[in-house]
Length: 195
Image 1 (cartoon, rainbow, N blue to C red):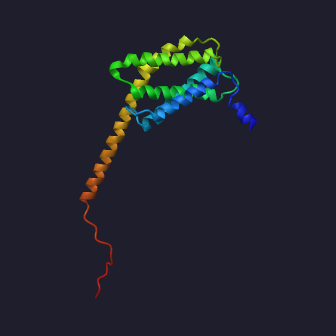
Image 2 (tube, rainbow, N blue to C red; image 1 turned 90 degrees about the vertical axis):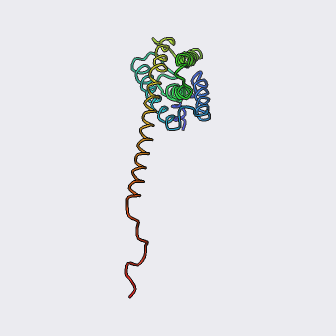
Image 3 (cartoon, rainbow, N blue to C red; image 1 turned 60 degrees about the vertical axis):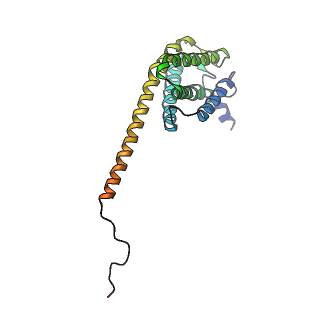
């Protein structure tokens, strides 16, 4: 059991910050009024952003290029999961839920600033250790994610949902047509007549 707890990397300086932010954002996503994204969209978005975040940050930037470490560099702990998988996913879901095309760049600027401040605070409290990366390097990435990739992802979600709804309507209307074109069934009973 001690080995399991050690692999959670809970003794690291500043781990309280990503864990508390992740818990707060998860609660917000669960209880926020769902304006533009439903539970299906939340499920898909959480998985896609979490996967991309884990692959890019842990495998490419963190391990392969070794530009920064979160917590213990030898252990991928709970804080890493919160920082790479949960927090970006929740921020993306909240962004899509409240996104307004007319105010696109206000949303992009606000969420870029929010994401930058989160990353800056991770570094400031000592949980994120920079090794060739600077916090401000993330700003163009955040602008690209919030300005281009998430709106595109939202369009894909809407088209997929519309396709599923149209397919369901089409199959139900086919079922109704088939049911109305079949002759009425004989009542169940004895096929033999009494003599």
